[in-house]
Length: 434
Ligand code: GLY
Ligand code: MN
Ligand code: MN
Image 1 (cartoon, rainbow, N blue to C red):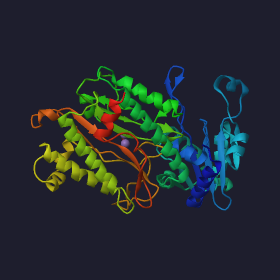
Image 2: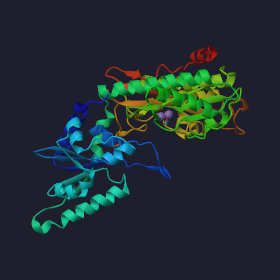
Image 3: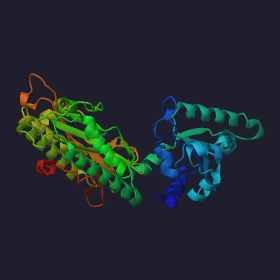
Image 4: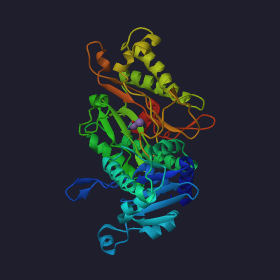
């Protein structure tokens, strides 16, 4: 699914936003895992969003102004290394295939940057993302400064290029939405597979294996984040990733897992009984979380603001916590005091895109920003009840979260992950059929 024109258009847009100056956007480094083994390579999302170029050791340089230029630095062709490590595009082919104006070997980067930075008023780059790059660019800028005697000036201003790119990435175009729909579809299939597979006596990692198998066999080689497969009390640990406990009859299983497909994340949570049948207290809590999610999703529409779905979910949860005798008083009183935070301590969602917690401001000028068509977010309320003297024992260790991926459309929203069974009836039916 490459689309050279799409990437070129994004560069043109960014160049217009910059008006003047030079932007330097490095790709992510290879990361060593141990000894001679690297982690699977994952490109930098900003770099990829603007280039579509897949190889490590590459840098995008944009020069704004009257004669805008986009320049790629990448590895040279190297027949010997290509035998060991595979194909390298090389600068010429990269330029021609990806629509850059110029391309140079990465080994020439410092030399060329000293030349390209000269007389540019502003240097745009992702500051603070990598101390190595921060230092390298500051050193190069210093070298340019030293040329003042021959009439060349260094950029007097340094700005974070992500201010522009984050805003661009927040609004997904049709091309991105198509990819995200597909990522979501793969992940819903994986959740269904996990539900059908789950039985008492298995281990959490065996369920995780089913998820990963389903991701990979559809071409999503990596999860978008480490899968959470948390049974029983483990579900009350928000970032549980050990995934090594045995599944017990009568416990719930919380799975927060989503694949990355073509650089885009999906992020789904489903919670269901290990034995396929919700017990009374589990049912009560589940229905509350489900209702809170429905209220939040109904509020995720154009014209509402970022905080509205969270507030809608909170009101339903607060009433539920009163009904379950977890909290006491009125809904407004509980929201005011924050007593609900003992059982619901996270936010109801985040932007979703190339990164699972995607870029984009949540507030504009101090106010929660309006939801607009093209934004993609998760809606993921939950309830986590740890054992305590003031908690009815039937509720102990119930941890439930329900998470879907939502696109804001012109008229409302589209739920990308609807196919993952969610109601008690749907879940029990899927688990009964195998
Ligand atoms: N899986 C990370 C999250 O739900 O935010
Ligand atoms: Mn999420
Ligand atoms: Mn999640």
